[in-house]
Image 1 (tube, rainbow, N blue to C red):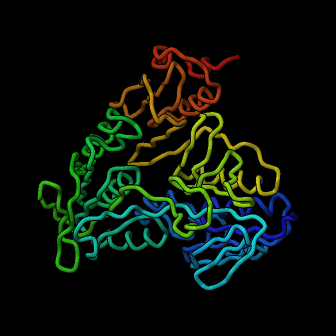
Image 2 (image 1 turned 90 degrees about the vertical axis):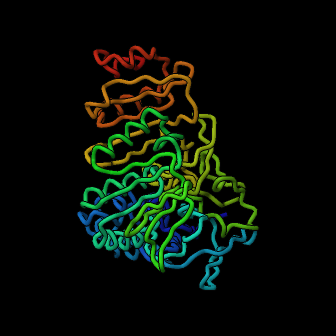
Image 3 (image 1 turned 120 degrees about the vertical axis):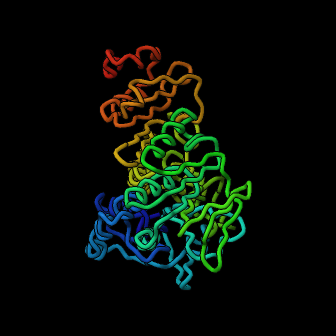
Length: 407
């Protein structure tokens, strides 16, 4: 089949980069970019940091100027959701009633915030942060508040707590588990970050599940599982996200924690691809499926999917990478460790500069660096090389990490 029409559902980082790549690679057919949000593709990392604190204007987060898409003859449908897919007829249905045929379809619909299912969630003053418009509304609310409660000490919750504290607000950070980031980074790192937030003046409360919200029309307090109430002017909830796949119901596209795809970003239906936060893809080097909710993957997988659509792809098998900025700490994570049997540390947390290696059977599966930029770069190369390394050598600061690479 001659490739003449590519439809991209999701005007996200992945969708935006895919559209750009199609044109950059010489595709001269029709490209239609559909987005549920009213804005053109943009970067999400600043939303919980510089933009939220008012240090970055909204215009600076967009991938491209507004006129870029018209200049590149990329048709856009912003503020319109896709509501159905017929992969046999190769048609996407939009809520506007428009039906768009395609030769190739890229699903890049990302994810939506997981909503708390507790009493009081209908009250005003409870915020979720995912989109640019969410960030702008929350920024205005924070500027008028004095006390904020953040529910969930994952990356988004911790970054919002840090930003609110830097804005001079009184902040309470609630985490249902025994430590922040426990499932991803382990207890030691979680407790380090909890302590660091406390040193910045955040009231961090662990083992503190939320049972509800209380207020007269507007939230006035967060109710904990032990019936204790935490007063607030507003609450921000960051308890994870869920893949945006409801519109694919009945389409036959295989779903399981997102859209199932192979290492070429292909789904089980001909001509249908997936990329970004919504894609649960097979990683050939790791030998398992991954669904990664971070900037680096969304950007690179969008490019990889576009090249696969054009028949120029190659297996997408990156060393995963993400980062989180909180106060003057930059956390960087490379690799993927769903499990590990050994950890070791280089550097001292009290110096605010260290790296932790997560190993399985002698090989580094992942590394977490805090203000350790060169070490994280070297760790990425060690993970790619798959070398067996003694933990003692990784921990020994007199041993240069790059010297551990095979010659």
